[in-house]
Image 1 (cartoon, rainbow, N blue to C red):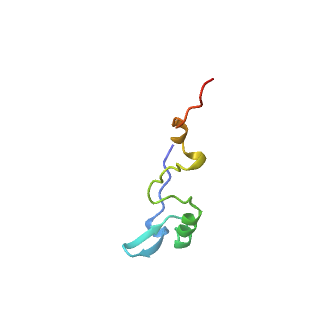
Image 2 (tube, rainbow, N blue to C red):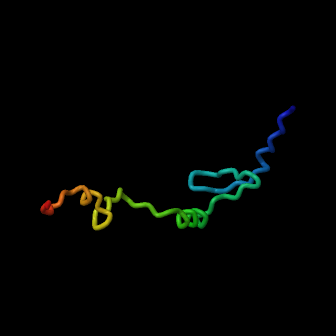
Length: 75
């Protein structure tokens, strides 16, 4: 089995970028700023720092472990 010949360098389209010219592979579309923004908008929102647990009301697991202040009088 033989390896296919790579296309000559002149066959690639060239795109000017701030760091210099870059070759574009045939059939591959470059990523545009619009594509990047669409990907960020579709991503899930994540907090900037870890969230504290909700220890209020029915979600307070420590309150369930407390003893009663007054014990009912046993007969």
